[in-house]
Image (tube, rainbow, N blue to C red; front, side, top):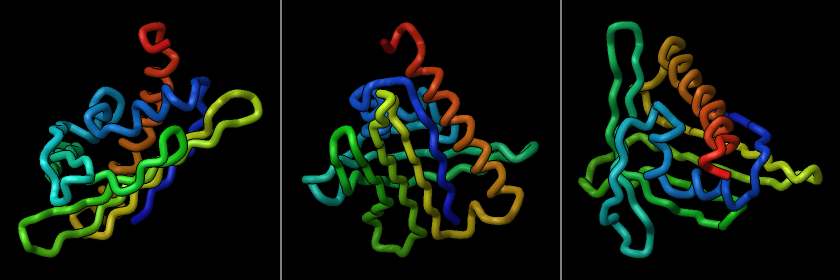
Length: 151
């Protein structure tokens, strides 16, 4: 499953990148990301986070805990996080990519792509719920960047 969202933001690339570059920032604008703690990862050179994703489907909640590492870091342009567990078992892939392009107007186009290779979050209903979380996250990010506190 792959979900891609583009949003044009009236903000400097550095301000946008600051919010997408550190998974610890995500809970303030992406409600799918319920809890995040920075942890020692499998490779001491890569920043790593313990992330809990949570989505509500009617009366049921789906929750998933995973370790994510930042595998690509190109300040103000691109960041990629990938699932990286160290328990010796096979796990479904999760990849989150954020790419920023400065527009001639001075705005920034942010493209966020979430790719999931498992089956816990599949099916039309759960895919729709996940897609709704991503959509709300894009709106919340816009509101956060446009708030007086962030300028």
